[in-house]
Length: 247
Picture 1 (cartoon, rainbow, N blue to C red):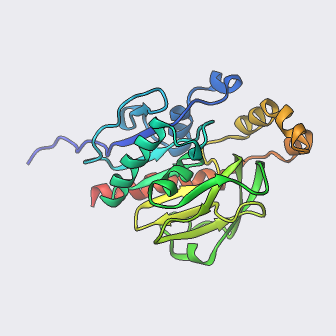
Picture 2: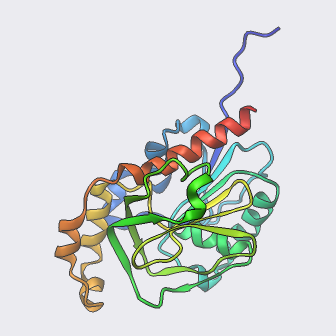
Picture 3: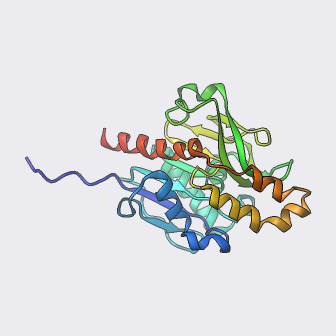
């Protein structure tokens, strides 16, 4: 019997864009996701599909995490549609997937849902997430508090869930803050990888847009705080996917 330890389960981070320019000094989305999810770089390679990189085969992956983006799913850009087709195939093969913000919307679109501009406009800042009854036995959200804070920034939303998907959480502004499709694919509209520093940086960078939309950037900045429970959702996904990979 070999004493060589089994290799760590490998996660793929799919980058669908870069952080806004002022925040890139803190690294790219893959770095933020690794830090928040407790992943080592050598077990979580990344591929930037927005920059034209090809996606590898999904066989053998312990899990896939899809980042946020400044792009819009409804624009149906070539790289985005290519990524959507890959995600649909991976989800149907049972690969554990977590989509974050754009990734959440892209996963819903890939599986037959509808994504578009939120009729109420932008949601931004540290906001309260409320679990739906269906989350009670969910592997990721079932152990979470019924209400918790998370970091948010988006103007598009999942307007219609794909067939077979279950809504798991909402906010006062957004009815689909999280969903699960099948047994192993999740989307979260909020950003579990964002720290309070990231959130403040995004609000400051969007100050002009917020003013144009009659939103008070200073009030949003005052409301920003730590959101450890939001981050916990990403860690629970990593733990759950590792457990499945080692079963």
